Image 1 (tube, rainbow, N blue to C red):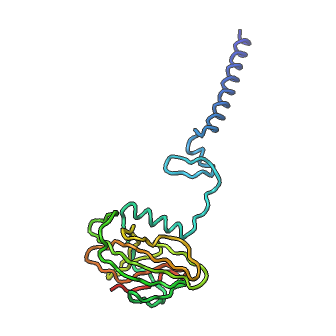
Image 2 (tube, one colour):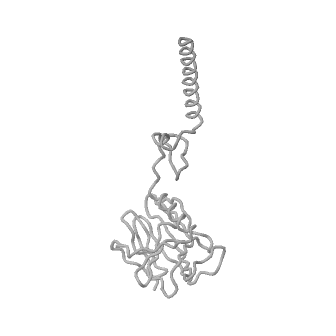
Image 3 (cartoon, one colour):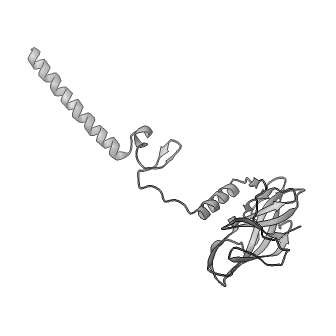
Length: 213
């Protein structure tokens, strides 16, 4: 009886062992392993929800990353306010006067303050300022984008872009020598503040291209 019982227990143990291996394989194949187990693969993770494993994500172009960040800030209705940005020595022009920054010539054509109401709302305590800008490339190629601009007010604070209610928007793209882009930018500034300087980011950093006061 003892030998028979021992053999029976051994058989049951083998069945349980084989079943366990099978279940582990199924779980691994189906992606049901715990987040700790999946953390060793190259899949990205958002909160507690793991993404399927895959090759490492490509590195975003810095310009694209900045645009995506600005879009996220705008869609969450949180205007970006920063301290004064050090700017290289480029003399800001008046409205209607061109100024060269990098390999582009920028001209502020007009300022509408406040921007007329439109599809996109304005945050409480803020008002919209719309600025029409032209960028022309003098040599080589250059990228244009609404996300490259900032507005500095008369107190020295700076603001990132807001989705414009004016058309056409400045948008984003690439220009070759001799090509230009004209469009509207919009910014939300606090009531009681006045727009003072428009800045744009070029290869050397942010430069002041127009005095708005």
